[in-house]
Image 1: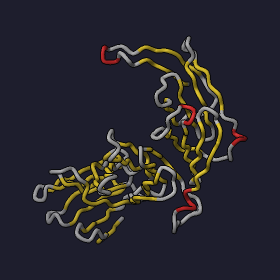
Image 2 (image 1 turned 180 degrees about the vertical axis):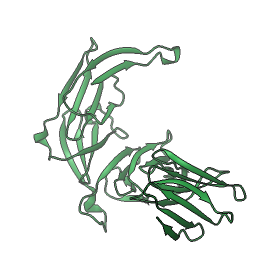
Image 3 (image 1 turned 45 degrees about the vertical axis):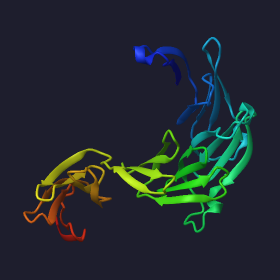
Image 4 (image 1 turned 180 degrees about the horizontal axis):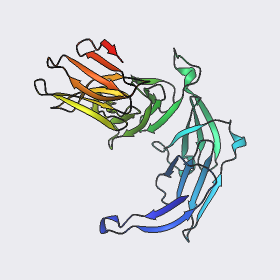
Length: 290
């Protein structure tokens, strides 16, 4: 179901419902056309729909014929309007799980170009480059992928200017208002900042992805250890909130954690009855019992 609301009076406490429509496809992303509050675009795993809000607030949609494109899985899309002078030249960039960017003219609903990014990255581990998210600025197109890479491309996708590797799939990329910085959200719950001017990276925030089951605090070093149902054990700086270290248990869920009196070692108990002793200096498992 697609619902449209008028939020122009939201600061006065009023949100007006305008219209709704139902569709038989799964919608994953939806965005208004830049500069036009009556038109928007939606995509799903294998569908593209062009929407228009009519004068009586009814919703009208047109499906882009799948026969016009290869059977691919769409993951994200953005409008390229930085250098366009006419609305008829407005282009859409559609990302895919196979490393392609489909460039479509919005008014004509016509595919004009396919950018095969996997062919332009050397070396690459896999033949398929799974793109997970995309954002565009006036000067760059920034791509996030399932393997944790963020690549800053030229707007014509001819070359990569910046490449950064993160620990998990890139879930979202958000450009700052002045288009000089990019917020990067990963599947592991970290929030990072990439400065496009200085090319400097900074981690802003990390978190567990599921419930935290136990914590222990080291008052001497002002550090804290937490364990969660996401299978991770994390060491934090209590003053800054920054994550200092992370231990990942893929097949076991940590339930309880405690420091030893020396604060150089900690013990962790898991759901399967295993107790492991970790050395904080070397990040090694010193002992394991069940």
